[in-house]
Length: 529
Image 1 (spheres, rainbow, N blue to C red):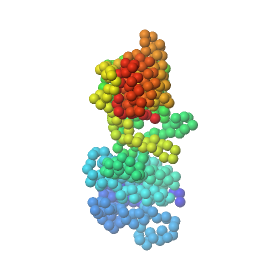
Image 2: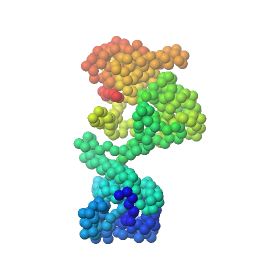
Image 3: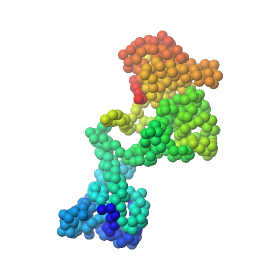
Image 4: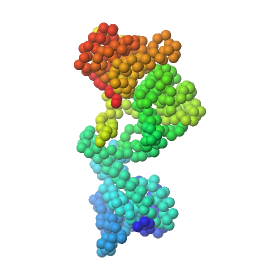
């Protein structure tokens, strides 16, 4: 069977968006409307004739509405294979009428959880009859059309207009696929709530991961790869995926990944003095904090102006015109900001390909959550790296304690290092990164690369000396040998912040003392692979 004329429709929706309009279209085509509770009431109030589900089944709605559609006269009308003689005989014998169209959306479980409802209310918003009807209809899509999203009403109406009141198999197959995805996502939300909120299981035996496609992207990491952007179904934090793009060409896979890295880092400075982050290939290449956003931009750019070309810029305060004008002086792929004033927007409008994303509030860097990473044959799941240390938790391990300014620089460098690919080394001074070494196979090379970049910056800008002179240096993990620390000392660093915990800590501390360095241990590592 290909075309199925719609003669009877069953409507039962929680979200009544577009319901009345759809009901009128169906009624105008002579479709018999069967409905439940509030849906029937909403349709009747507009003058439409509606048959209650209890009239169809011969049973009243009972148990506070928990039992109303779970009946053979409903599911028989949905599941019957109409050109099967045995099915047709059973329908005739038991007076089961065919149902050609089902319009169902489910109890608002997600919204109920999100508003902080009590457990009993959450349980009552677990839909049973709705998913059953959806699955029955979707399984029998050869004969039944199932609509689960008000956004698809327009497509249904267009289908009916094109066919003179019928649905075609390709349309029903598409709607069935969406219906099963909807019930899968719904069940996943419920299972997640039971596991995480109700049972406090961080890693349940079965982990349901689901998402809603926002858009397909031009390509993935490389042009031969395909890609799409999804957002989680259910309660989740807001970030780059929810940002509003004000201008520029379509964001790519790499744009999203880099912009996310930039936003995660700049969020560390939420509610603080103006800060600017420049990211290239998911690594920060310059970070600065100053009394004005323009000063912060200049400081971040000066750290590594070569890498900043074609980079991603993120700021922690509303973007102003002078800073936007300065950013426009180099090629920039994406700018991320909580907001942008009219002058900033006007400056960027001259660069038609530059993407401007506004995010509203910045995400909480200490928020809880899980991170998922695919591997061959499976995926790894871990809690987000939201650990933090305070100044009071630092342990001075050298003979010389850091000065107040050194301590401030240490904490700034430590904040940046947690967002740099391991092995990570960050030099910082006066709220500005002096050099960043990322992704090396040993920590000594990261130290040397960071110092080299700082020396290049000094030469580029005509400074009398590298900014690593008198800086603090941070390492994302312990120094397994003294060589990485000595490389930092050679670059001019005077203070060191690192986790500690190496079997050679004593040797490293002795080397720091011999070099006159002040060193503190955090007791916390921040690998970023």
